[in-house]
Amino acid sequence: MNFANIIEKKKNKQELTAQEIYWVVNSFVNNTLKDYQMSSFNMAVWFNGMTPTEIAAFTQAMMDSGITYNLDDVEGLKADKHSTGGVGDKTSLIFSPLVAKFGVKVAKLSGRGLGQTGGTIDKLESCPGWTGEISEDRFKEILKTVGISIMGQSSEVVPADKKIYALRDVTGTVDSIPLIASSIMSKKLVIPADSIILDVKMGSGAFMKDLDSAIKLSKAMITIGKEHKRNVSVMITNMDKPLGRAIGNAIEVKEAWDTLNGNGPDDLVELCVTAAGLTLVQNKVFSDLETAKKELLNVLKDKSAAHLLKDFIEAQNGDFGVILDYDKNFTTKHKIEITAQKDGYVSFASADQLGYLSMHLGAGRATKEEEIDFSAGIYLNKTTNEFVKVGEVIMTLYTNRDDIESFKQKANELIVLNENSHDEDLILKLLTNDDV
Ligand code: URA
Image 1: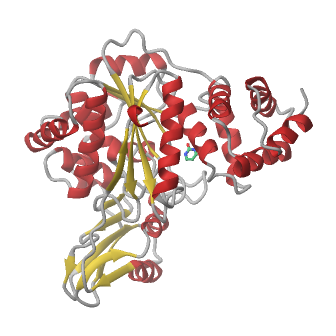
Image 2: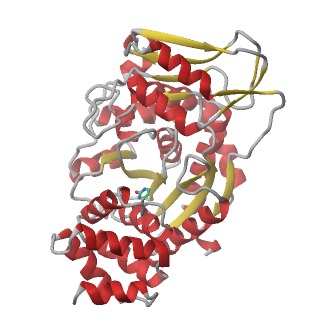
Image 3: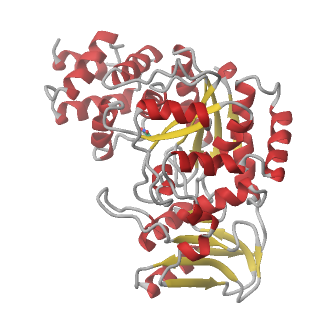
């Protein structure tokens, strides 16, 4: 096979065979296909798309570049969840105990944050000792005993995606529906879960800027899942505002704990019970979403799933005590209160920029090498659509860095105070296997 013929076909919108796609992916992984050739392939896909058959082959070729897990000896139903990334998104930490409470085990690979988006692994590492680097045997053991286990994504999992994504990131080819769908699903399919729930973020800060493209991406992922006999549901959710009130690492684990103890912010509760509800319907624990959500709200109220977060963190060597005594363990040199300069209904110029502010406070990484300050972050004393009076605190910034004036200025630039409230839906659309 030769690349010139393959790229010519793709350029002219002819369908590639599975063999040709495998050859491209394998040659790139083996370094016989060069970066400039793979970039040209990605750009041809960006312009001309891929047929469902091509997407299936591309996903499979990427999966085959690394290891897959076998959970046959873990009895019972297993669920997986993925979010395309959001500011303040600690959903997995609440979703997992909720689902496990009803006997469905949560087996998940998670990533680290980069830039404005947080990563579940970083958040969990704010509990000293917690590790996502566990063996497959230990992963299975924890699934059997606690019902939740989260592993960090090692370099052995879908290495082709890692290499291709790094190239896409610097060649303007991230925002391609077939490339995103195959990238996400290749990493989901290596865990043999009975159900997968995907939270596709939509809005100014997300890859998908409008509902139409979010639906196309969702359907592409459901189709890939169906080809692998997986039950995939998708929630398309609004990412124009941060989720919950806490943005950072330890502060988000604390908010997850509070939510599991019945004190969660409304938007976070709604997202978590919807995600968990859909999963429980997929696994036939409940016949419909409304009943599932009602039961899940009861579980939050009676706090009966909270211990599962603690148990799972402890099973992976984390000291959960630091969260139980949060104020003592996560102090910062500076606590900066940002107050309202007039009365009004709060909104934020950009959720994304709040994520970047949190990163600058020390809670995130601008480069892969940077260390995270687990105690840094933002607490939104008032959030979108809440009324604030002049002089009241809108947000509190926690940091050990000394650029206080620049943090204050940035925070003030992000706050918008409106005369009227304008409600936007958080959950924009739900799609299941039956919708494709
Ligand atoms: N997340 C992924 O894992 N891959 C993409 O291509 C985009 C978001």
